[in-house]
Length: 86
Image (cartoon, rainbow, N blue to C red; front, side, top):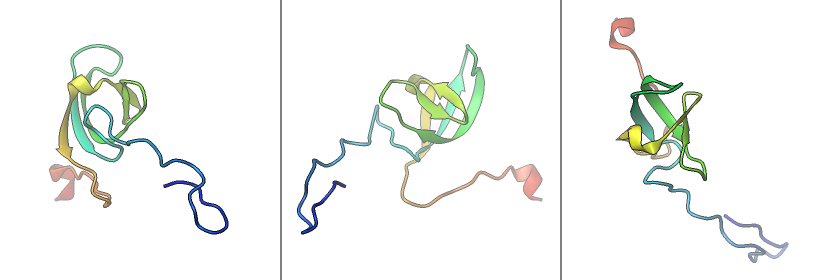
């Protein structure tokens, strides 16, 4: 996407690539963090940043701890606990 003038011609350059460290915003990941403030297992959608740590469930997570579960495809998904679904 880029800005266009009143005739529809591009005025600026396109945005830079959205993929960072193999992840893009909206990917579902599982992160197993062994130590630190966000210690534990986190599952959810990742928000990619320019720096190395990404946002996952309100925590800054290093991508070294993350494993992809599902790539962003334009749809939104939720997790349901199987015990609660019954």
